[in-house]
Length: 126
Figure (cartoon, rainbow, N blue to C red):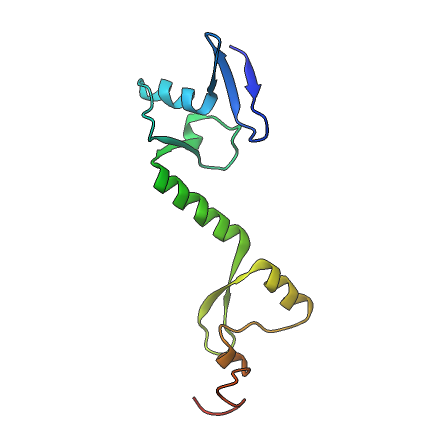
């Protein structure tokens, strides 16, 4: 069996009986001892699509798989902060957070906590 790499995505493919199959699906099928159903998705737990060890693979349905990647994107693009005024935890995009750090700008959870609320004059009681 010869290993090939797919164009673009980086998944490892195998040529078996003249047909290409994705190695991670073949590894999972061999482990389970049965063919995978069409609705079963094999997910790489460490996000390395070339790491096809069975301990790095999990079977999910498509909605679970989408949710998993959405959470991963969320953690890659957002940072969790604590408001210096009220102590509430909130999320901010990493790019905006870097800008605030460069400009020594304290980040707050809302305009009200930062004192920039046009509905409430700065220093006015809530």
